Image (tube, rainbow, N blue to C red):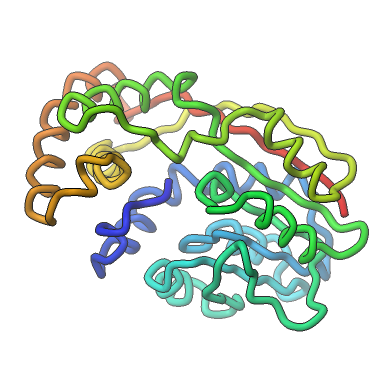
Length: 269
């Protein structure tokens, strides 16, 4: 989940993201992604669009001191949380369309978890991934499936659209596996293949998830972009309040549970 600029500018928001979203939402997929590329002792790993760094941190845990891990993200606020959480990883601020790599620097593994769909030029970003990957290296890229296939988030978007009009949710905007595979092949990757992975996500407390998801929807909408901060806060509160019945549909004794699906594409240099 990538967040709107007005949310990212709040000093505490990346901390909220790390506290409420990373463990239940992003870490399970990070585990599956790194299982797919089969890390080996001594691997150099690059995490592109790392956010607060969960893929990089899982790689560090698996490799220990034998690996060298770099995380790159465009948000200095996200990276501040990443550095505080794992100071032994090389965190770098930069754009995926112009990766801040040292001269000739390459990696055995390059991963991009739920970032590609937001890049302004996906063709250039894929070429940058190819540049960063050493000969024979392994690539893993994940993008959420379209939200038409994810009833929970589709229903929440429907509530938000009552207030904001149609919303193009960028998080689910590159959800067709064929397009993802074609992009990687065109960038020069070999052995490109993809799988659709689904799993049940569980949140003991659904309230932070609902509020952050609503903030993201408001920030991506044309109406939300035209609002000032106070107007956005009011409409977020209204949408959160109206979304209660949706949350109740997905409530069980453990909190909130819903199905979520992603493409996971792998390739080699």
